[in-house]
Every structure is written in C-alpha cells, then in structure tokens.
Amino acid sequence: MGISGIGIWQILILLIVILLVFGGTKRIKSLGSDLANTIKSFRKTMDEEDKEK
Image 1 (cartoon, one colour):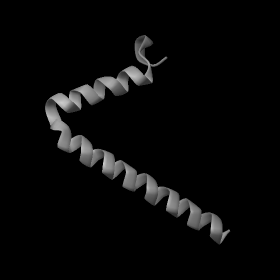
Image 2 (spheres, rainbow, N blue to C red; image 1 turned 120 degrees about the vertical axis):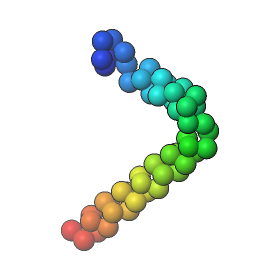
Image 3 (tube, rainbow, N blue to C red; image 1 turned 45 degrees about the vertical axis):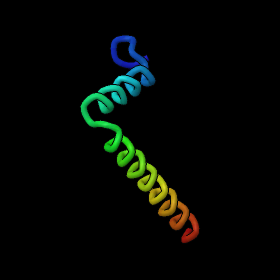
C-alpha cells in the first residue's frame, strides 16, 4: 500500500488519465518511446560494464 491506502497501480492509472486529459496522446507516445530508449541505453551500458569486468 502506498500513500493513505492508495496502491502504486491506482497512482499510475490516475497519472495516465491526467496525461490523457491535459497532454493528449502525442505526448504519451513520445514519453513511452523516450522511456523505452532510456531503458535500452541503461541495459546496454550495464552489459558493457559486465563485459569489462
């Protein structure tokens, strides 16, 4: 449980609804692709560090 009995999934759903209402779908699409690129970059960096050791 998170803040005052609200779970993480409820918070995420609320944030998505707020983004849809105020930001539109284009921003969510760009945020999703930016997040995916960040995760890929992070994994690539971690793999490179493991190979160096």
